[in-house]
Amino acid sequence: MARIRLTVEYDGTNYSGWQRQENAVSVQQRLEEALSKLLRAEIRVTGASRTDAGVHALGQTAHFDTDSRIPPEKYAFALNTMLPDDIRVRASMAAAPDFHARFDARAKIYRYLIWNSPHASALLRLSHAHVMYPLDAARMDEEARSVIGTHDFKAFAASGSVAKDTVRAIHDCRVARAGGEVMLLVRGSGFLYNMVRILAGTAIQVGCGKLEPGAIARALDGKSRLSLGITAPPHGLTLMRVFYADDESEAAAYFDGILRRFHD
Amino acid sequence: MARIRLTVEYDGTNYSGWQRQENAVSVQQRLEEALSKLLRAEIRVTGASRTDAGVHALGQTAHFDTDSRIPPEKYAFALNTMLPDDIRVRASMAAAPDFHARFDARAKIYRYLIWNSPHASALLRLSHAHVMYPLDAARMDEEARSVIGTHDFKAFAASGSVAKDTVRAIHDCRVARAGGEVMLLVRGSGFLYNMVRILAGTAIQVGCGKLEPGAIARALDGKSRLSLGITAPPHGLTLMRVFYADDESEAAAYFDGILRRFHD
Image (cartoon, rainbow over all chains, first blue to last red; front, side):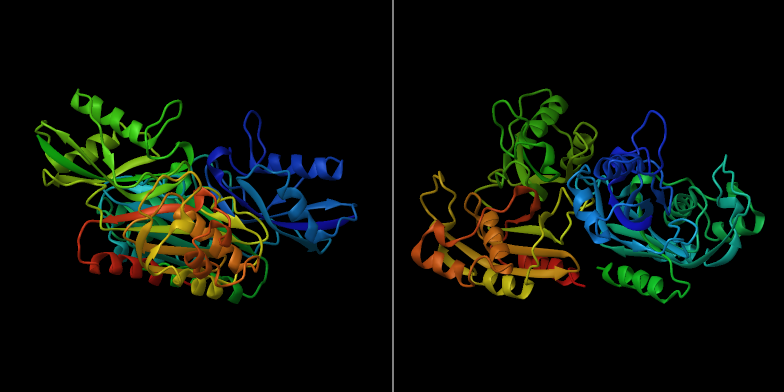
């Protein structure tokens, strides 16, 4: 048996999310169908992150096992001839037999995009949340930075969340503006269900004056969801990349690169 | 009667192009339907550019006449409640009674986007043409610049084109790379049918070595379509903005701004 690692990009618009579920089409299901057809065996894949319905990914990471002798780097090409065009395998490679896409992940970077204008955008409607009220990106940036550090993010846990351990380390979080676009970028060891969307919703509400600055600090202090803003809609969110090195430098460089290219 | 000017953005994916036609849904039709409903009268709009099926626009310009007393700037808000979400009116304003969106246009800027990677992109599939062969953007830039100037673009006229006057002035044309994305940006007084897509297709083929550099110069010289490359697919193309001032400075500044923000 060999373990293969995949880097997967998808437009989440037409999917119920990453994870397989009844009565709805997921990205995992489409990927498993393509792999099972290719390898003529029932294949199960494990993803790093269970992205929600409507959430996109540029660099979801997944693994599966096979005894096929297909060269590992060929899976990307073979799968891309079988997958729908809103799911693409960007890369495939051999992984260590004990590599685990989810448990071995050391850091993830998520991007939340906003189109900030009185009118919605036709071209950005599937990738950006529309906010019509003017946003103060500098104020949002200051608010967003207050999540940096190791905190108990209980207040950020979506209602109905089953996570027991709600402590996470956020390594960096920034908000920037480029014309009518506003981006929140966050890098951390892990995220609770809906955590990035609650973070984005809180930053948006602070940015347009509907919430007082300091909402995140108050929520981390009081552990209450009520101190925070709305859960921002899923289609603004993209899982950018998953990192497996203990050393943070690769993730930090990727984060800084995205920020550097996003400006007026 | 008052003349109103509209700036229109659309995702061309689901339309047969700007112009009304039988048996297919066009952007013009959807806009006229919304306006006619809003104003309870048959309204016809005139657009600056007849973009093709699948081509997008960020700043198509159009005009129409009405005797309604709706304040001109309110049309954008009213129309956006009635239009499908892949068509948005970005702005509406009063125009001079003799303003003509098409005949008064002094310059247009088009952008052609390419995703250059062995694998197609899921997230960019509707806005970027996919080219799997490595592209030399510097070589493409040099080739693209050779269209600058006032030339007889007969070689660029699509077969079946009915244009009699094929002389156009191209003010600027550049190719740049940002990671896996390659952009061709062109600014000119006007463009023949398919001209930008033939220009992009030629730049692509020069960029991957399938055509010798100098193809554009040879085509301008010999007036032959055969010296040029393929007609690149429509979905990479976006009409960015239409300019009405005789002075070129506004268009030049907008062009330079797009180029400046597009880099690694």
